Length: 201
Image (cartoon, rainbow, N blue to C red):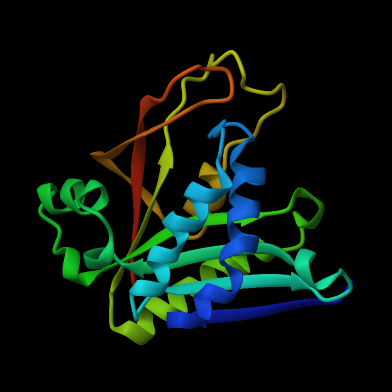
C-alpha cells in the first residue's frame, strides 16, 4: 500500500477541502458522533482553516487510488485564538491563556486504513506544528455520550486509552456545546464535548 503523509498550511489547505468534507461526513456518521452531515455546510466550515495562516492539516493519501479518492485521512489544528468563541470561551473561563493553546480539530480516517499507526502520525504532526508555532499547550475535545446510548455498537471501544497514552487528560468541567442533527433525529440537539489537554514537555 502506497501511503503518503503531508502537512498542509495556509492556502494549501484549500486543495483538500472537498476530500476532507467527504471524510468528515463518512467518519462522523459513526458512533459516538452520529452526525448527519451536509457536504455544502462541511466545505464552508472547513474553508475557515485556510483563513488562519497558522492552521495546519496533516493528510494521509493512498497514491494507488484515483486522484479524487486519494485522501483517506486527515487531522486539523489551529491556534485556539483563531477558533470561534464556542471553543475559546470554555478554556478561557477555566483560567487558561488561550494564546498559548493549539487546538486540534477533527481527526478522521477511512476505516480500511485503521490499525496502521496513522492515529499516532496525526498527533505527531499536529504536536510538531504546535511546537513550531511556539504554542506549549495542545487540546482537543470529544463528544460525551452516555454508556447506555441506544446506538452504541456492541463491542465499541472508546479512544480514551489511546489519548491517555499520548499524554492527554480530561479537563474537569471544561466543555464546549455544539448542536448538530443525529442520524436518528429530526432536528438538531445540543451536545457537550469534553476538553482534553496535554502540556508540551
